[in-house]
Length: 314
Image (tube, rainbow, N blue to C red; front, side):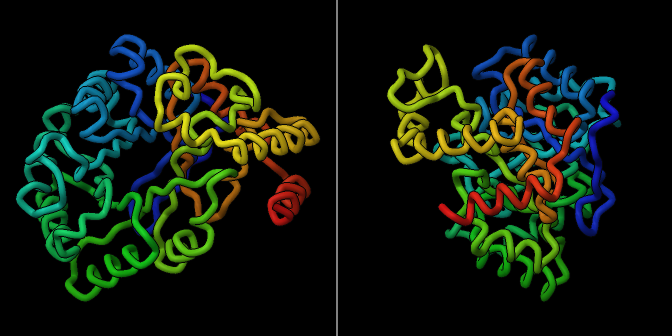
């Protein structure tokens, strides 16, 4: 196991997580079970103990593959999964009945008796938050879930949920998963301060902007064949001229700091005091190693000041 990895407690819990976590959304889609097992093995070798999936990833296949890969070492892993996304036309959302059903289905697919961190994958405006929290509270009391969290919530939604938990004596969200990276920083205006004020851990996803911050995608060049941006109109649409211009500027900054851009992007988030763990997907063992390379040389105060100065000017 890597001696460079750091570990922290999620606020108000006994959950100890690695400060880099493995996103498993590629399992069962971009990579098969055998390849996924190799990625999980590589994660453990790098000291990663925090694994993140969701029921909708490959319609349950990601959970099945992750559960099988963790067989025999469940006690070494913190497992996070999510409910609420569309599994089918009927199976979606955050109604109490569906929350209970979704949890049992995830437990079966993962092959475990409890989920360490259970996320509401996205807000559900059709269901009062007190109803969803009530169902989650039941799951915690039953021992099926240890702690609960939210994903893709606004600052106001986070505040409302925490306030409801306090008023009604229900289990509360202990973490918020949000999109945050060097290209996507709107959350710094409200969501991140709300999490800090209300004592929620921040867990950023897409730290490499789905690949834009690897430097693999450049202005005036074709997307690499079979890459995420080549195969997906959704991701290709994010590779705007403005974003790619920004990437060029960030590549220059990384070079000044003698860093790879991907290393700089992950290290910058890891240095944020509100961030408990940087969530990053990997399709190969080599990517796992790359995504933890910053741990060997964390950003120092001078480097962070230089980056902050660069960001403030743009």
